[in-house]
Amino acid sequence: SAGATTIPASAGYDKQEDYIIRELQKRFRRAQSSLDKVEGAVVDPIVFTTYQTYCMIRDLLYPAIAASDLLDECDELAMLGGVIINQYDGSDYFQPLDFQAIKKGGGLVFTEDLYTQTFGKKPILSGIAGDEDSVKDVLAQATLKTASLGKSFMSSLKQYFPSASTSKQTGDRVIKVLRNRGYTDKNSLFGASICSDEINTCGDKNKCLFTFLKEEYGGGLGAFALGGLAGVPFVGKSGLGAYAHHVPDNNGKLLILYGPHVGIGSDGSVGKIQRVGLSKVSSACGAAIGAYKAIASAGATPIPASTAGYDDEEDYIIGELQKRFIRDPSALDKGAAVDPITFTTYQTYCMIRDLLYPAIAASDLLDECDELAMLGGVIINQYDGSDYFQPLDFQAIKKGGGLVFTEDLYTQTFGKKPILSGIAGDEDSVKDVLAQVLL
Image 1: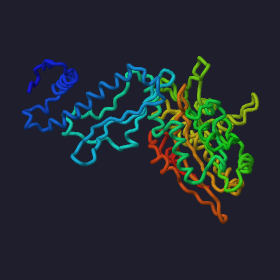
Image 2 (image 1 turned 90 degrees about the vertical axis):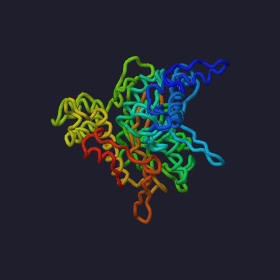
Image 3 (image 1 turned 30 degrees about the horizontal axis):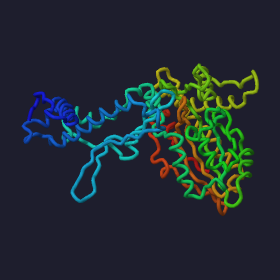
Image 4 (image 1 turned 30 degrees about the vertical axis):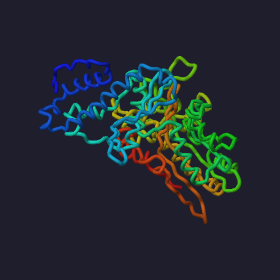
């Protein structure tokens, strides 16, 4: 009725409605598509009003949260936004527009988008929610203004490890699947081929995937350490045999977590981590990054073993990674599109996997257990917050009648494999990272 003319406040106490009128009027002024003669408008005015009311709510709510101490009082906040559609004598419907998890750690705010994994793609609202700018506004993901530093960590996490989840989220999914296969704390023994770095084995099960799985499947005995520097299974066939001989009687089962780790700093730097008690930022994984630096300096020239002292594990890592860099030098070129530390991390995963599976096949491990579950991926560390895990492999293996049977558990647990094109190297390297290895 008023158009662009400012609408005065109500004569009586009606502050809520006055606020709504004032804020919506600003939005209608920005997008006239729903006011053009109202009846002849291309965009339905009530639908437009509804979507703009959603934006108004969202744009008031998020700053209010940022200004409060809400995130200091909870472990995590989930925000589910959208439009409720009512009908007579039937179920309401819901048009989702926002779903994200927000948490605070170390003075930083971290946001994780939950929309895609829950609802799929955002709706197409062109010609429905107003002009182009109005549609973009409706579909935008709101962020807390205080989250600028946290977003740097999250942006690098999502860029390089696109389907990573927190340790607890990963652990909950794994346990759900394994519970249905008969894995319990009484009949299962946990082993881990992860880096020796203490950052991966903290005491908080909600921060470290290792601790989460150890408490669930350690049977009070802890975990069998299979990995050395960078997570490489240097225990070999003999160590795997010893691990197998400790499996509980009566349909005992084994679970192996394997893979490298990498830190991401609060500024988004891959390979950096602020450690508790240290003022200086350090590398993670130090062994893998040290190998990369040696390879970047030497190029294709063979790097001799260390003569300064016993360093067989690092020598092995350098030698094996150098072969992979020679096959795919995309991360060594100056100004390369592929981040070299991310590439190194994914190639370290392949190196661990390609040593671990043949060692299992050469041992008597499958003869000693009812079933073996293999969970492989990359552990992503951050300062004073939960680790994340980028899953790359999850399968169950068992032996019967002299034959080995493998069942893929990845899809039912984590969904589709991540898209790593332009992240994990050239096309062949990406295929290698995502490949499922069979015994």
